[in-house]
Image: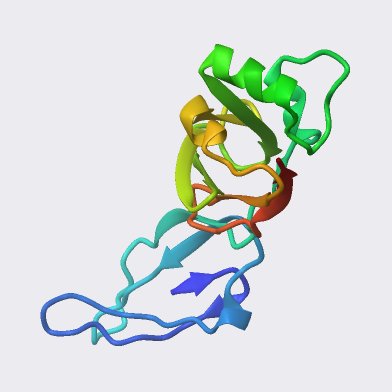
Length: 170
């Protein structure tokens, strides 16, 4: 079995299966690669090699929260990370507060927002994501406190981004 620059010689079991293990240092770098298997019988007759395309992806995506946070509250010229009474009223009227951001995770991947011990989710579309927080959840925040927000995402290969965090003062 050959993968990248490494060839492994393995024995075929009586049931026709075989296993090859590659060390982390033997796995090709992130890219499309090919595994090629060749088998020979005891007489040394070789079969036609079989190849399989493999994509190696070990690079986690990135994710960020667009700030200012209150730019989605609908109050002109009042965008920052402090939720004031005018913005709170605008969120109440709209019925939601939308948190947005960017990521290089693939379209359709799920973004998770954790805010005030609650979890919300949205999906990636064209490098962007948006998640609506119900107005009732925002209106329940206590004045004078600061609340942390954290978003995370994993790419299609299962690599998890380092969470992006920020805070909202009320």
